[in-house]
Every structure is written in structure tokens, then in C-alpha cells.
Image 1 (cartoon, rainbow, N blue to C red):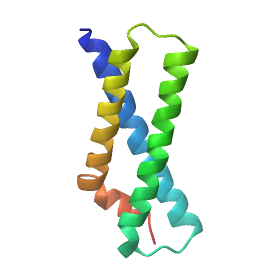
Image 2 (cartoon, rainbow, N blue to C red; image 1 turned 135 degrees about the vertical axis):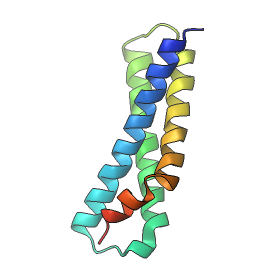
Image 3 (cartoon, rainbow, N blue to C red; image 1 turned 60 degrees about the vertical axis):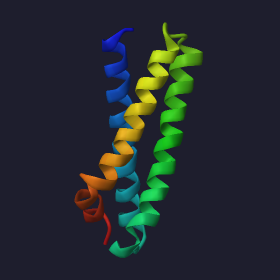
Amino acid sequence: MDVVSILKAGFMGFALSLGVQMLTFFVIGSFTAVPRQRFVRVFLLGAIASFFAVDLLLYYRITILQIPNPQIFLSGCVGGWLGGIFAGLTQFKGILVGFLK
């Protein structure tokens, strides 16, 4: 098993997940008046948006670019995405809430 590939894919999924979550919170906080008490609802929207972003990345890398060892890339990227979801919910909650008004 190629450890470097799984680590790269994991970091890619993690960074994409947190980036989309932060972008979602920034856009929602800038253009709507969502109170901070609605964190869970906005977080679910960010989690769904990050899932679609990771899904598009996987589709692009696996089917269009035809990377070698797609199973390793898939498992690393999904693991990174799940890590990004849990980190956003626990460690980055203060930062994400700061984007809301």
C-alpha cells in the first residue's frame, strides 16, 4: 500500500472539506442574517456542500484523469473528508461561528 498517496489524498479531502465549510459559513454570514444559534443548520449545509465538492474531486481525479490506484485515493479522500467534518464540528466551531452575525 502506498502510504504517501493515502496521506496526500487524506489531506486533500480534509482541506477541501474545511475550505468549503468556511466558504459556506462566510457566504451565509455575509448575505443573510442567520443568528449564531442556528449553527447546526448552517453546518449541515456546509457538510452537504463539502460532500459534493469532494465527490466532484473524486469524479475528476478517478474517471477523467485515470489515476493509478483509485481505491487508495478514494479511501484517503473520504477519510480526510470525514476528518474535516469532525474537526469543523469540534475544533473549528469557534472560527465557523465567527463568520455568522
